[in-house]
Length: 304
Length: 257
Image (cartoon, rainbow over all chains, first blue to last red; front, side, top):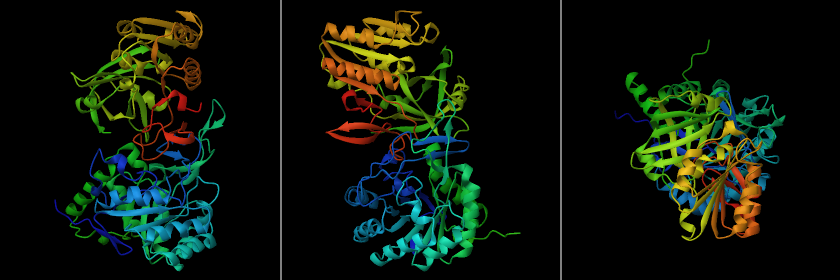
């Protein structure tokens, strides 16, 4: 088997279309005992803020039917630690390294983006969709004005390709997609988690200390496919699809909906090897169907 | 720190008490790496998240790891339905175990377990000398691993909440008495959080080195998702550290209960 699985997103070539989703893969180091990280198309690193962030109190995790909730709250060591400690190691892999950036105020985003601009990180994913922090995060991503203003401000300070990660917890995701496209986003990734809640019926307490949290996993896959399809049809920039992708068939489906590449997250918790299985499955799918370039299937869904 | 992930064969299954099961899993690569106090992350068939279960015994010669777990919900129930001969999907070994090497050769070690907190202390006790075990259970029907602990420990103290076996009451009673006798080089503990808090308080009073194993709802199990944190006071600073990778065993004095 020797198919070329490479895909191009916002001008960047990924060796294959499977990217580890931000927040599920840390800075890669935790998975090195299992396989070389360059087997992945790319890694979207843990959401990073200008300063170190402690995150929310535990419990931060709850299981749901075919999914999970999390309320980590962007715990991270800060952008300087990312740049000095983790990025040099990650860049040795040779695949695409994406910094995921979050902030409470616009200056947080621009200050960190300026620092990242001076590094060899391949891409900046703007997290304007974290449901687990009270200030910032999703508050930016839930209005066209908010999403546009962060995108515009970061665009002004970096030449790195910008991928804006959208939240599904909005009335019209296409309006927000168009708003960030208009301000210079190079591509869009979606969907971040859906806001959810579980209650322990013995204690009558929410399972999560944060009361609510982000819902992910196979259960949200159809919502993600729908939103990716809608956004891919609404904008002219590239779209990266995520939300519950578990198998290679899911990845094909997401690409047919309009995604040029995919991100996987929760599936890695269930099976750390799942991204590699998806990559192998995609290669076999190409062989079986005489496909030479995965872009041949992107957006090829034939709606009724 | 290295670990493995794969499907391994269950070579032994036993029910030890109501809702408590013991699996012996043949996994030579993982067993070779394992240390007492570490855990394995088991995939319950049909579930999204794995279940962290502490290692009860390590048999490097035969390449086996033994785990003992309590059926608490649907996930552990699905794991308990697996049988001898079935394959079990497991990431192992994970986390930091008890730091046996940091305790001196002289004096006694006390292992203090509450309920399903007992199992990880069995391997710990097996690897040390001059052990006193203090194990607490709800009632006589909940007692597990008594014979195994009696075999490897010099002294074995059992207590039950209802007094149906051994001393009536919780483990802190006998623990205080043992600490009072002196010559204790370390206390290793695992059990309900409230019990661990009391053990930490007592050992602090007596100035005895103590490590506790914490439990938390987990995501990845390997440190990536930062889902399972505990409040830890390290170098005078409160931090939220990962139970899966920075723990599950912490110095008792550092844990903010």
